Length: 341
Image (tube, rainbow, N blue to C red; front, side, top):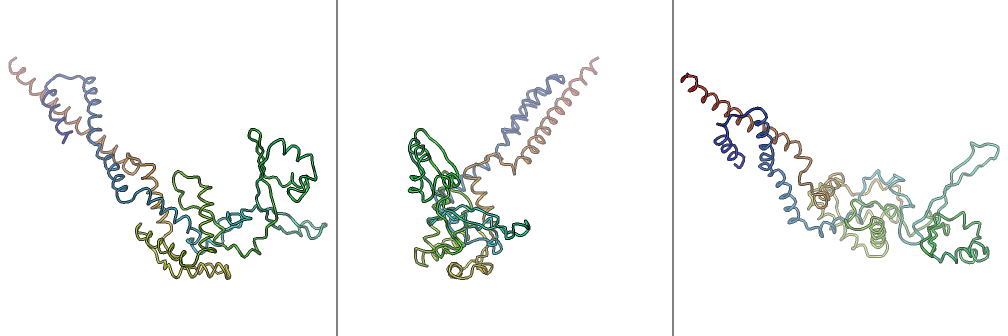
């Protein structure tokens, strides 16, 4: 309506004047931002969508949902994913102590004369941290007995085990390989602790802090709290999936039974866990909500192409009408002059 009014006034008041090509170009340039302003409803759509989202789902509730998903994430992978050493590995365990651990692979030759006869063996060590005054560390490096009393191994072995060392002002922090750990014989862990991936980090918190906190909560659900605690968590998950319109066949009772079964029994049959739902759709939904909450593109890419097509089409149409009206009026004004001659 605004654009139509401007176009009518432009034709009524300016089409009678004699314009050369340069002046017409100037009018066309002025008309372009007017058309742009008149089409701002494209952007107001995104503003409205963002406002509607925050009315239906607060940021606090959204973060609560993400925290629940991150804690339960290791229980929710497609069946075949449990065979992935990248996703599920003891080096991903963050809790309880002595975890996390570091893996050290060593090549063992069975026949020194035959280099093809060998195997790779893995050993695991706890990742320990020691912070001390730099002056004390310098003394420690020169005192072999002190190193043995403090770490249980000599100075030479300590230097081999150091993972990283950093100095800040007058203190030194050493991260080193500590005591040997045997995860394969550890009954206090299971496959569900071997994953630290987040479905979506909570905004404003470090990923490492969230991963450790989620690991602690997950361990409590598996080993410290009663089964009803995990059952209630899966019931919340079921409600969450329905809220986000995610297709799911998860039965909280059945999934709770499966989790405790595979915690204690043969974990090679994890492909039978009953946790089927549309994981891809859930992740897409969460990513979309993250974008709307924290990166609200009011000139969104999905409407950008349409916007410019409509913008230039409308501008070209309006400018063509103005040029045509100017030409018609110019022709009418020239006819009486011709007759009078």
